[in-house]
Length: 211
Length: 211
DNA sequence: TCAGTATCGCAACTGGAAGTTGCGTTATCT
DNA sequence: AGATAACGCAACTTCCAGTTGCGATACTGA
Image (cartoon, rainbow over the protein chains, first blue to last red):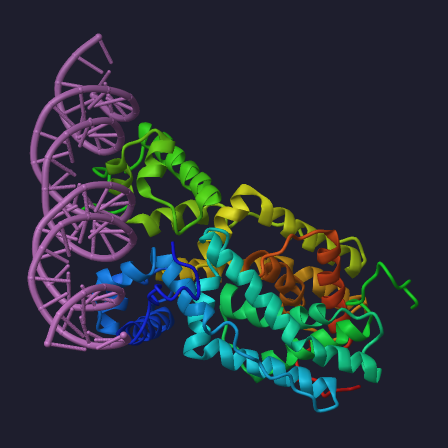
């Protein structure tokens, strides 16, 4: 039984270990972006990483754990929250960033992992919830500032504005699927703003419908 | 070489054949609803249908063809287009119907088939496009009548209204995922209506922004 | 009713990928 | 330089997709 800080403890990944780990995780992301979550095989990842299959299984218990590990490294990336003083400009910038991210290799890798419906590993499920919760929290200040400036009605729920903006983009990317151009992106932004300004996205439990 | 109508031709599925086919397709839908598309195995379907695996492979070339066949039978179902004289009521009825369908066994079966990201068989891909195109076409008259009544601005694109209403529901069901209650459903409807009334969902190539 | 034929059940097979095990080899740290 | 942790390798098991050959069975048409 070794505890953290125990002088007799050997760190599990040192030197060569770290290089292998990085190579495998990078290869996993590349495979995810190329063939998607369903078609990803451990042997392909091993080949791409220049590593033997056994090495992967010694570090990660199974395929899902590997994917979760590879993805979660890039899940905590900071997304810049724009602050131009105009909610129209800020929200459009967020939407364009979302679309760019969706088409990037890492974005595609994460998406293909996280859109497995209900039938995915519990770790993936939990990771997905954390991911979106974090993302919404990161960009909520953009909406809060707009409310403070009086651009959006008081009581507007920031996460609802973000979701309303993001929903049509995800819908076209994952469900339909249709190409996403600037017109689609702008329409998503304007839809979210129109709904927010109409008071649809307010918390109704605290504020009476003062229409 | 037999041609259709050739008197020497034997119909491929008669008598016993039809019962087997129905049992297998029903079992496929049940399995889809239970475990989803990714985890569906031909042997499970065979067991549930009380049929041998070989029988399935003799009638359908592979797993995907079986799923497509099972699903496509239920894809052409008519969805009633409400006509109460009020777009608010009509659209809310459409949204509630969508949510009910999503939670039904057949709805879950179809959804789990159609949300496989980019990595699904071309037949599934094509079936998905046809499915949504048909659905949008079926309910477009609801929007068109609202435009004719003056409830929505002229030039409003019916399919855009439907997509804007449906997107948040799919988003919460498939991406987040969050439970979908009446508040979420109503908010999706009001968002679509607010955007339509603000002129966001009009065809901009034909009508100048008469704001 | 009865023969003919299509369909089905069954068992045994190939092939690919997940995941495991034992052992020899290499790189890293002290 | 030597001990040791990490890696490479090969050989397995298991599961499922998909195939094949043959014997059994149920439907059809006369």
